[in-house]
Amino acid sequence: MDAASGLVLVVEDERAIADLERLYLSRAGFGVEVVAGGDAAMAVIRARRPVAVVLDVGIPGVDGIELCRRLRAEDDWTPVIFVTARDDEIERLVALELGGDDYLTKPFSPRELVTRLKVVLRRAHGVPTRHEVRLGTLVLDQDTRMAALDGRELALTATEFDLLLHLIRSPGRVFTREQLLSSVWGHADYASGRTVDVHIAQLRSKLGPLSGIRTVRGVGYAIDPPSPQRSDAETRAGASR
Ligand code: CA
Picture 1 (cartoon, rainbow, N blue to C red):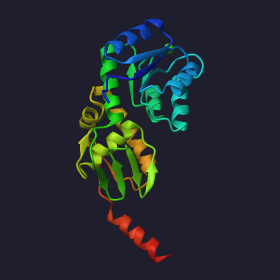
Picture 2 (cartoon, helix red, strand yellow):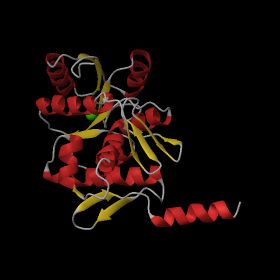
Picture 3 (cartoon, rainbow, N blue to C red):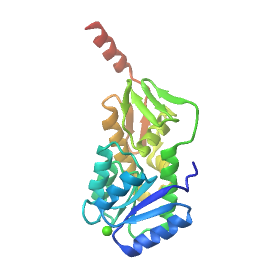
Picture 4 (cartoon, rainbow, N blue to C red):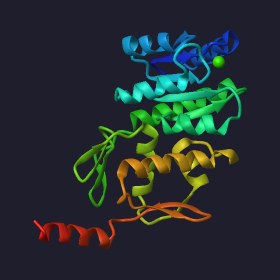
């Protein structure tokens, strides 16, 4: 699938911003539908299955954060790029924790929106390859974008999947936040380090205590192959049966 195709839903109650987004997204080859409120957005997402949603947080009715929460609760992983009104870090972090794939802070350049959207879509659709990537009992299938740990399927956002994939391709290697931002998000502005931290925290909570994701203080993150403690635990579990 060509990344620059398909319907993008813009949820934005400020007419001037919505018009600008529509203009740039259409020029980039996307179909665009604009709605001003959360309830209308939900209806369009269900009826028309957009390839991505550009979601203003401050909208009438169901707000952007609640809308994303509801989508993810329904196991809908349509990529979401949040647009936040101001440089509100708490709002940004909550948005990412809820399964947002990226965010832009107003005012933003519409070109930047198109760039971010293409990166998110490239991630969501993946690069077709024929193999799985494994680390211990953690398996990532790049064809189906499915992740599993110990045979249990993990519900990951496109961003979480790509971040985990990037880490497990080089077990033990320490990546800086900047390296992860530029490889996984496609941009590395200085203020975005927390974006990596939030996604790592999400991965850890989804993978559980044996995630193997290691924080290297002052540097970044690495993932380790399954530890000897794990084998011991398995041995003990086996012996007690
Ligand atoms: Ca607004």
